[in-house]
Length: 283
Ligand code: GUN
Image 1 (spheres, rainbow, N blue to C red):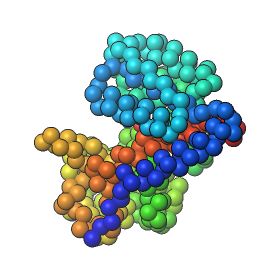
Image 2 (cartoon, rainbow, N blue to C red):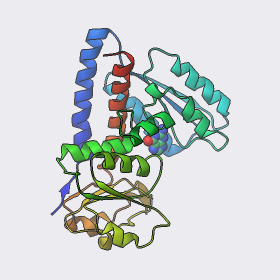
Image 3 (tube, rainbow, N blue to C red):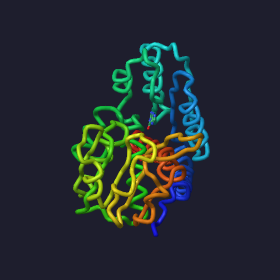
């Protein structure tokens, strides 16, 4: 029977640690980690995420600012906000919620964030550091997965890891992190041939392609660790990219949806903000 990787429990534990460290640093320096989130438009899912980020930041003892702007905003308007936060000494982390409205130039906006405040790890400077294996701010969802694997003592060195999905937010960065942890990494995507066969060789399988319950028994090696990054809505219910009930008896470890990877993401954002604070304030 699989061990369920409990992201809810783990993120609560990590948040306690962040809160305690923040308290100590506040006492020592008189300063608090500060995070600014820019949300353009009224996408309901983004709104839920941003509200949750704000609540968690406050729970951790951070200074938190959210700028909500309309969907008609221009690239220049967002660049002005980014510049304001780049120059604001009370802000150590800047996050621009994606997706941006269609008329905004995402590449230009993400590149305008100061790399040392780039708590999403999306700036090409941080992407480059990650890919040469150096210390940097790393994307929250994949970094949260790595923290979860580490906390459960899951060995990665020498293991076959297969990642389904090649997004800049999850697939590519988690592949880089697994490689750094000495796994042998294969990245699959929509054009991959023999997908199930490749996945069935995986000791660690990461599903991050956004297709509800796509990963079924023929994808799974007996004893595999299965990480489900998908969040999909099917018949009004949340489900992942993995057919959880269908595969779980084959796995050694598996993440549920909800309650697996999801809760780790915002916690990791707080860890990144604390890290940026310590770097910027030289603590
Ligand atoms: N939208 C979905 N996931 C993310 C994320 O990790 N960061 C940002 N900024 N936007 C997102």
